[in-house]
Amino acid sequence: MTDLAWLTIAEASTLLRERKLSPVEYVEALYARSDRYDDRFNTYLCVTRDIAIQEAKQAQEEIARGEYRGAMHGVPYGLKDIIDYAGVPTTAHSKILRDNVPGRHATVTARLKDAGGVLLGKMATHEFALGGPSFDLPWPPARNPWNREHFTGGSSSGSGAAVAAGFMPGALGSDTGGSIRAPASLCGIVGMKPTYGRVSRAGVVPLAFSLDTVGPLTRTVEDNALLLNAIAAHDPRDAASTRVAAPDFTADLRKGARGLRVGIIRHFYTRDMQAHPDVARGVDDAVRVLETRGAQVREIELQPLEVYAACNRNILLSEAYAIHEPWLRERPGDYGASMRQRLLSGAFIRAVDYLQATRLRRRLIDQFNDAMRDLDIAVTVSSMDPPGRIEDQEEMERTYPRQARNAFNVLGCPALALPVGFTPDGLPLSMQIIGRAFDEATVYRAAHAYEQETEWTARRPPIA
Image 1 (cartoon, rainbow, N blue to C red):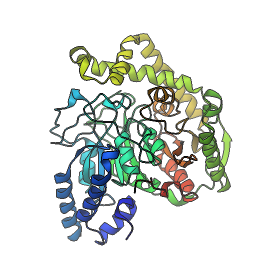
Image 2: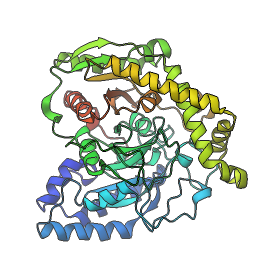
Image 3: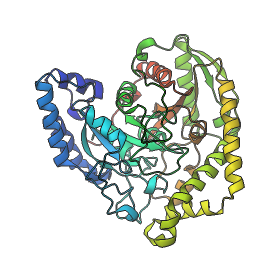
């Protein structure tokens, strides 16, 4: 049997359903791996071993009785530690919430429990999903499995690193300015920011109400679609939740690239910013792969990246400051320096600037919709640079904002990051595939078509 640590969700689901693999055996194998290696990568904040064994035993009994619930039944997963699981601390990686124990599951957690999923633990994050990789918090930052001296991307850092390291086949993260796609990009896995409103945020510690999304991180495109299947649905607990019906996101996976109309946003990484040559080459090569498989490709022009970045920054920091103002007044010293500095900048954004940013956002959405009118997907870079060294503060400050992700938070459309190669030093490279609102299925189709022509998602970090 394939090493259990590297089973995909799809493979594990088949073995579990056919009773060729015990959910308890699977959980114990994954814990054995993380017990051995995670002290090098710090992906877990809280290991929920007792819960996992109990849920795995329940799944095992249900499957034995023929009560199979679907692809996530008996499959282990992790939660970014801003997502509630009743009775387990949700700390948001911060002293502020160190003693916070929710009494109710987040909606996404409840949906995964209903699907038979098995919680392995709560995963490291940047503080409140905004602070950078900080060394002045009660828990250390997660590190990159491809090279522990390098950055994971954030803020869903533990989720991304744990999946990449083979500690779990999938995890949930959140994305307000790129926080699912950044660790997916820098850890060499697949991360989806769904359409705004597609997945409930109820029971998730907020960062910016009008931008926050929850989504899956996995090692393959099919697994990502399977995990999104489990969590996507309307939820009256979330005021932003939409009533658009969620399809089976795996239905079109095997339709291939032929006939897909692709717009490449090249100016993001050639004119607006100059991407590292390895990154630019990886994206361009990926587009050529789609083209050789029958996709129709042409360049498209949107507003410059800085327009999107400024819009995202004004909205995000204004809303984040509004959420954190009471704690900033009462307990400023309990924040890490990075988080405190970022939050305080929101105090100086004028109401008129926030309102103008929301008006600009509407115009940017209209322009994007016009550009996509005769296209199925768009493609561009994710991070402009390979992962930097996590303890090099100057490099972190230089590379952290060099990305093309927050544009798609502003636009609210689905955006997926997936690997397109590696640097000569063995560090991951990534691109984004972007779709029209509520058309995650076509994004997955294009990503799967590319994935099948390459071997990037099959590579494993040199941990052992």
